[in-house]
Amino acid sequence: MGLRSRLAAQDEPAEAGHGDSRLVATYRAKLLEEIDLAEMAGMGTAERRERLERVLGHILSREGPVLSAQQRALLIRRVVDEALGLGILEPLLEDASITEIMVNGPDRIFVERAGRVEQLPLRFASEEQLMQTIERIVSAVNRRVDESNPMVDARLPSGERVNVIIPPLSLTGPSLTIRRFPRAYTLAELIGFGTLDQQIMLLLAALVRAKFNVIVSGGTGSGKTTLLNALSGLIPPGERIITVEDAAELQLQQNHVVRLESRPPNVEGKGEVTIRELVRNSLRMRPDRIIVGEVRGGETLDMLQAMSTGHDGSLATVHANSAEDGLMRLQTLASMSELQVPFEALRDQINSAVDVLVQLVRHPDGTRRIEEVALLASRGREPFRIATVARFDAQPMTPDGTVPGAFRHFPLPRAVAERLRLAGESLPAAFGVLPDDRRLITREAL
Image 1 (cartoon, rainbow, N blue to C red):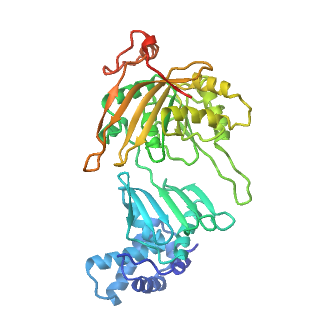
Image 2: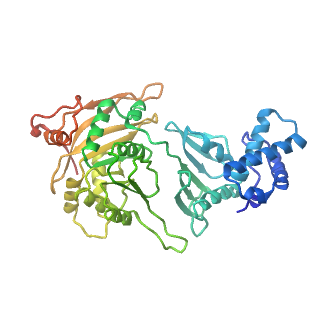
Image 3: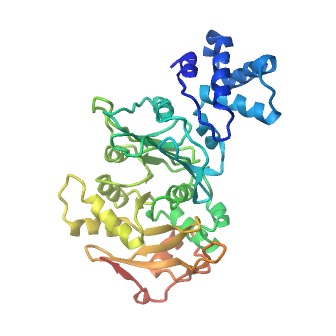
């Protein structure tokens, strides 16, 4: 869509403290009359924004109303945001403290900050204006949304994950969710957020470097991708890493990384490339390690087979609410393969492939913590048995709304300690080694 049509197509903007809507409409039209479209076509987005702001500033100086400096800046910002950006959503996208933007129809906009969700006093002028914003977003990724294709899940060029669902599937009007991903944090930085402590950091670093296969498990918004990014940063730079994701979110810093992203079908229902196809293809790319952003279907079986056939040190996440639930979910997801594999055989695959489970939890105060680090102690086709080596013991919420607690550490099995030693890794002092693995305390996950 050209600049002139984008300016002209906007409905009356929302009010909500961003200046009078009549002024915005009036000066949008005046701006349209004065800009040189041929000149603007050859500019980048930043240069276009600067030029529009300068032209609009001259218009306001020449014939504009009497405004304070703050009112003038808000009016310029609003008009240019409507022209080049996403209108009232543009300032939210620039706010680094916001991790998620949720639009539930034209008059209900929520954001997440520091793990807490709050409603903002903003609204779109109409459902039509919200739909225009949605169409601008999805068109940036060569997608379309309409009654025949009412759902879109995609990654924006700037990295955000966007999900759209519109009527008739959404009964409250068009719904838009934009999930922003923070920069890649290190494990040391996550200590500052309370996600883990120093001893757990040292243990996880040793496990990743020693090529233990790690599954990161957790509920929605518990920080799985953030932790996976941090763990992947510990992989030695000389190793070849293949990442497979539904929508690319990982931000690996190593040089030898190949990033694969699935592709949905086009409007004719063709051209889909699934996670499973990418996992299978990754095995032909001579990977040292494979990282799957989230296993959620039949690709789980391929991932488990890769982990148990020479691709040690691979990482993946799974959506589950406990370590036990994570194992059962892996088994269920692996059964979704077209191969009719008995559950007992799938259990054998998981027991031979998975070494470590890291369970994340999001507390009511918004903090995200490692709730448990567990080792898979079962073998062959026997029922799953897991042994906790680290745990966060949460206490009741305090009057100020925080969830206190402390991390606890437990001895590691001798076999695990020996594997770390042979890999040249030292065992953190807080854990120690069991003198006899028969003393290992495990629990079943049935």
